[in-house]
Image 1: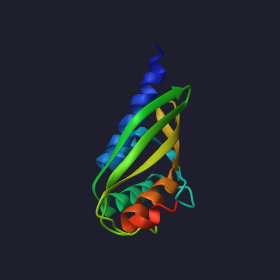
Image 2: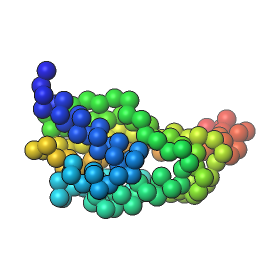
Image 3: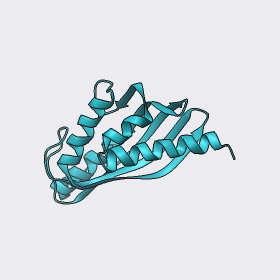
Image 4: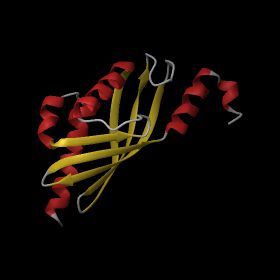
Amino acid sequence: MDTRLDSNKKLVHNFVELTWNQGRFNLARSLVARDFTYYASMVNMPLNLDGMETLIQTIRNSMDDFSIGVEEVVCEGNLVVTQSTFSGTLVRPLMGFEPVDKVIALHAATFWQVRHGMIQSGNSLLDTADLFHQVRKIMTPNAAAAF
């Protein structure tokens, strides 16, 4: 087994845990390159680590019981791909979504570039259509059947 691939997987997993689940960005800074860039399909511009921190804090503050679970990690060379689910109860408006009284889930695939033991970038593709459907179904149960 390739220890570099295992190290890359562990690096990304630790980064996700420290940032998304724990909000411990001071520790996470040691895992990324100085010119780290993060892209997300719901955000219209690339973010540096400070911008990513703001995004994550906004999401964490909008959702009670927020967590992210990583279901799958695949690695080939310098590319690590994670399949994950963000979940929680939306208690404040977030990116055009109104609060709901049930747990919602957002599925994502993120492509991470790793070089020299540091994360260079992340690019998250978010299943916003499924999220929209969940929220609509909770808010107007009869209208959801039309989709």
